[in-house]
Image 1 (cartoon, rainbow, N blue to C red):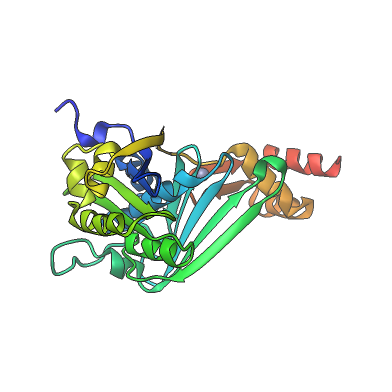
Image 2 (tube, rainbow, N blue to C red; image 1 turned 90 degrees about the vertical axis):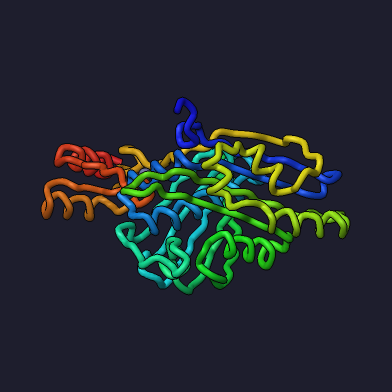
Length: 305
Ligand code: ZN
């Protein structure tokens, strides 16, 4: 097959419908979820949970301005622990799950039990911005987890905390065997002020009747197809589209800055005790090694101002 769904680049489409009273965002995320799975060596249930969170973050980030970003923290008390997913306005997405090598018994219907893996707990959504002018403004909202299935939890958050009637659908399909993400994606429908009741009822029906995301993406659906399915034939127009990618902001230089922030005495102690330092980025699992020479250089920089 020349055009398997998993070989297509990930994309996000942001659309508006019904005389600008309905916002629809849809994305395919198969590649970026695969990359997250590979970097974190995550098992199936953890990959699905993390993949849904990453996709949800990408959808929510569609309304951000340049230099803003959104982070979702799912603090569940289940065996996979905390999930973090972050997305910016340019389609960069990164995230981690605390215990990626965790699996759960399947549900009675044969599906992966994401809700049980996440458990009960709290969902936090943090929007940050203003980095370009040296300010860091942030808005944080928190709600209890509804089911731990993530789409339902984010829908509840958007409706209850941000007060925008919303419906989100997320899906990650794992191929039989190990570590292969067959399909991933999602959509978000939001009703804006001024929408009439007939449109709202129509959307309730079309969202409920839409086939599972994984089924649509596996069959080769594009983000435009997902928009179409979500709003069931309403006229829509494109506001924006962008590629999505698993991408982290860490670097050797940032790791050095992090270390310098600890202070010169701490760096001296690390050099004396360990000789070198290894720092692993939570978000992407990249390992940065600072040699004795690196540490001596940092000490010299701090000492000489
Ligand atoms: Zn990183």
